[in-house]
Length: 443
Image 1 (cartoon, rainbow, N blue to C red):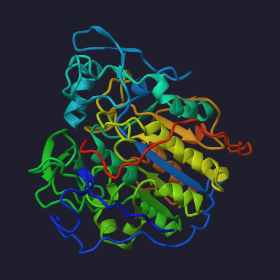
Image 2 (image 1 turned 135 degrees about the vertical axis):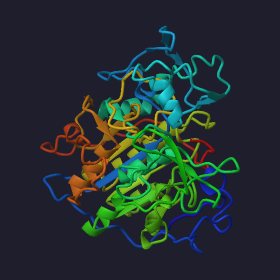
Image 3 (image 1 turned 90 degrees about the horizontal axis):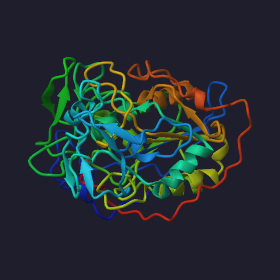
Image 4 (image 1 turned 120 degrees about the horizontal axis):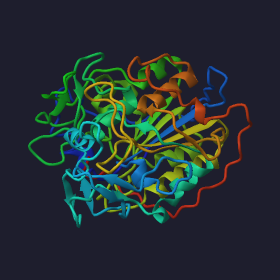
C-alpha cells in the first residue's frame, strides 16, 4: 500500500504545523505508514465469521435529529423546552448554517437534572433564525436517505449513548480507550476540547505547549487543566499482542480534535504511529487493493462529517462510498461495519441517558450496523455505549479487556445472526462525494 499525504495542513488538524510550535517531547519527524502488502486475514477466536471490523466515526447528531421516519426506531418529532412548552422539531438542512454548543456545560444545561428540557437555553453560533428553537431541528429524509437505507437494509440501535458528556476531543478518546482519563485508572477525565491563546488549538502530543484541556473529577468539578498528551492504554494495545492488525484513517497528521492516537504518548512516539494513515479516503484504496487491516477507524473531512456549519452535506454519500467499496470487495463476507456519531452536537434528543458518574453517560447518538450477518431491518433497543463497540472487537478477536467502560457495556451480539450464511451485498444508492483536505475548526 502507498499512503497518500495531504499537501496542505489547514484548520484544527495542523495548528501551526508539525515541525513548529511543538509541545512537550515532540519528535523531530513523523513516522510514515507501513508500505507493507495486504494484512493477513485474522479470523475470530470464537464462533464468529467476522475477520474485519470498520468503525466509521461521523460528527454531532442524535437519532431525533438525523433519523426521522426510520421504522421501528424510538424517534420524537417534538420536545419540551425550559418553560414546559412543546416545541415541534423543524427541518434544518444537513449543512446547517449554525452550530450549537456541545461542551460539557452545554450537556448540563440541556440535560437539566434529567428533565431533558434545557435545549432552548443553549448558545448557537451562525445563522439561526430563532435562538430558542435552534436545537429543535431534524434533517429532512431526502438528505439522509443513504443512512436510512443502510439502517433499513441492515440494523440500527436507538439506545446507543455517547459515553461521555462532552464534545469531540474526549469522545474520540472514548472510542479508542473506553475512557478519557489522563492516565490509566486516574481520577481525572478529559471533559472538553483543548483551548489556548489562539483559535483553532487542537489536542494531542503535537499541540503547542500553551494548549490545555479541562478535566472533570468524581465530584463533577471541571477544571484542573492539563496538556492534552496522555499515557493510557488503548484498544490498539490489546490488538497488538493478539496479532490483530489495525489502522486509524484521518485527514491529516498532527494535532486535531479527531486525532485520538496523536494524544496517546506511547503511540505518538512509538512504532504504532505508522498505523495512523492519512488522508481518510486512503481506506477506499486499501479496500480495493486488499490492504484492509483487521480493525479500522475511519474519520471524515469537514464537508463530509455531518458537522453542523461545516459548509457541506456529503456525509451520507461519503459513508455510502465506504460501505459500497467493502460490499464489492473480498472483505464483505467477513466484515462488520459500525457507523457511529461521536457526540450529539447540541441537537435535541428526547431519551434521558443513564447516569453512572459525573461524566457518563451522554445523550444518544445514532448507530448503524452494516454486515452480511446483521439482522435485516432490525432496531435494537438495548442500552449501548461506545464501549459496546470496543467489547465487540475484544470478543471477536479474543484480545482480553481494556478494563474500562468496555467491562460494563452491553454486547452488540443481538444485532447479528451468525447462524445464517452471509447475505449478498446490495449497493447503497448515494450521490458522489468530494473530499477536501482539511478538518473544520469546530468541535
